[in-house]
Length: 413
Image 1 (cartoon, rainbow, N blue to C red):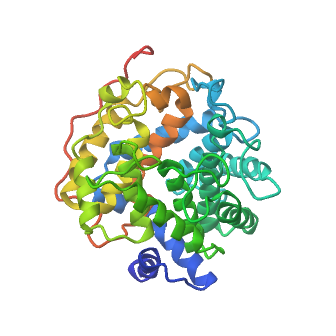
Image 2: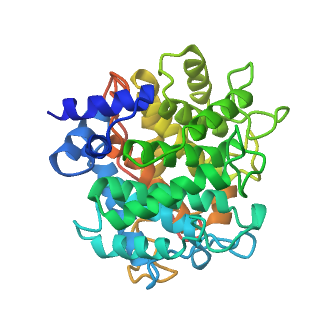
């Protein structure tokens, strides 16, 4: 029964063939069917998760719930984020936190976090601008990063709509999709911080995920969005099989390669495509490593190896499947389970860290603990967050074996 429901979804993702609105929403919900109940438990067991990974997800969500603002948002500046350097990050942070709750199957209708989710959705919807954009204030380039905020928040609202069929949330998801293609996208290309500016791979990825989710939800999505993203990614690919961040001539990075693989997967490229295999094999040369992240001093091929890399690398390798997924999954679990904070206060204050991850890397030190904890949870939800898009993807060839998690380090770790 579930296979019959997911199959039309896979066809849509891989071919772009549209479905009728009612069918699309029903089959989109099937894509998320592994997020709850017995299906979630089976997916964890089948794809290489464990009781430890599940406990880590729940602990991270509990930390996020305790640190939500009364108005429904998350304020990264209160929890080690450098809000003075990168202001107006509440929309993106709230979107990431909301995605983490949804990824574990919680909604505004069901579960112990229904109130947290409802308040987050209401706050995000209040941020909508007349043109459909989701951010706190217009303009600002890299200081505001509005492209990130809009796409992440829009993805969260779209996923919520798919899971609950809340018509109000769906209306905001639709206006966000329209904004993405008609207002923000660089014509014939991708997206960046501000509307119609030269695209970059990182921002483009969030818009791709948003628009593909909107498409499978049965919302109206301009085909030019996907076409532009594909054309942009083609320009970013190097002969070595890696991807650049932006303009041709820039050095490629492993993080942008992981990001691009996920985009390609959701845009319909088979995981057996030689270019995909080549890119994936290069990513496997740098597995998740806490020490490497902590020592990073900037965004470069050596420095962009933290939570952002782990998140996209995990999504990419899960869909690549087989031995690649087994190898990546073992390293990812070791990093996240061994370094999640355990113990201490649980009062929602700044000293309350139980269930979170220290912001130890270059990007992490700017974005803060809300970011690392949401991204850590999303990464560990990979086993059930999205159903496999290809036959055999996400299925490990062997059981992951690792020692029990270490006790958390002291505060100054």
